[in-house]
Each structure stands twice: as C-alpha cells, then as structure tokens.
Image (cartoon, rainbow, N blue to C red; front, side, top):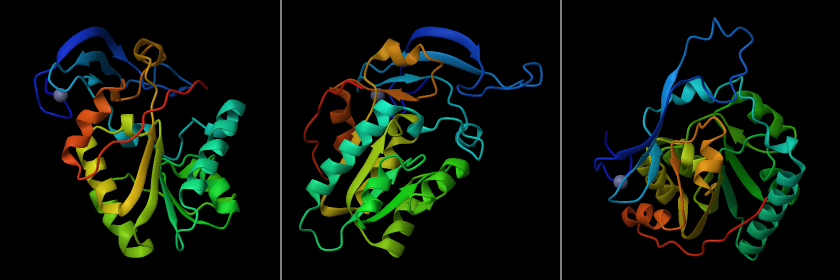
Length: 237
Ligand SMILES: [Zn+2]
C-alpha cells in the first residue's frame, strides 16, 4: 500500500479488521452491511501515520452527519478564542475574508459573522451547514479541493485566513487540499489548522480520520507549498 502523501510504501502497525463507519448509529445492525478494513500504517519516508482503506467521503459527510461541534462547551469556548485570534490577525486589513474548511454548525465562523467580517464556510454536510446559516454564516455545501478553491476566488476573492479544525486529516487527497489552500490564500494570508496528535487516543475511538499527525509531519506536507509553516502550538481541550 502506498503513502497518501509521498507515494512511498507504507508499513502496517495494527490491523483492526472490518469496521462500521464511525458515528454511524445505525438503527438496525443487520441492515448496515458496510464495513471497511481499519488498519493503522506508517510511512518511513515522510513519517505520516495513516489508515489503509479510506471510506468514500460521501458515506460519512452528507445530510445525516451526526457530529455537532457546538454540543461541547469546551469546544464552544475554544473556537470563540480561535475566532478572537483570527480577528486580531486581520485587524486593519481592507474588507478581509475568512474561509473555514469543514465549518460544521458554525461554532467558529459565527463569531466572525457577528463582527460583520466577510466569512465563508465550506461544509459538505447539508444538515450542519443549515444550522450554521442560522448564525449568519455563509456556508457552501461542497468538499474542498482545487476546483472549489477556484470557485471561491472567482466569487468572493482571495482569503486573508483559511482555517480548518479536525478536518484536514479526514481528506485522502491531502495534496489537492494544500493546492486548494494555495489558490485561495492571499500572498500574505495565513492558514491555521488543528488536529489531534495523540495517536492511539484518537485512533481508539472508532477512527474516521485518514491521516494522523505529530509535530514533525506537517513540515513534510509543506514542501509542495510556496509558503512556509510557522508556529505549532500544543493545546489541551
Ligand atoms: Zn509518505
């Protein structure tokens, strides 16, 4: 099996065998026939840790998506703080634009919208995108890639900030995502992303992420980008 980032051969660490989709909550287990082979693998070249078989994105992210960010009080506080940090970063910019990949129910962008700053959420799950619109979030129901990035630039212009929390790791074609971010960001724009880093902790909870990170690996993702990675911060939520 090949690495999803650098195409090198990957090595299996653990094989959990066939598993149902995380957060599926099916009413009738005998009718839920879908299983995917859940294995954890390591790339010795770029150090990315990743799952083997990848679930088709539309099977997970659709109009019945069950994970609502705003049900967690600690996440509510955290994303309010994130919005505050972003607002500080764009202070003084002329008509700035903040784009979030995977904006869920608007937990972060609603704070940007409340300040009447232009914002745009990219959220393929229609049910949660609809919830975010109640807070004034502008949400488009799409997966993020180069094509979506070009559409955004055409319609809204380039972004001062692109943000994504626990989302980049869900996307198999990570190179397409970073290419898309390069298209959307202004020359002096900033991309923030947050991921869980504790490998077995997050893998043990019925994993739906494709790629898991530690501090070293994001630097390997940046090689194809014209911009450099900046800070890495550890956060406890
Ligand atoms: Zn690799």
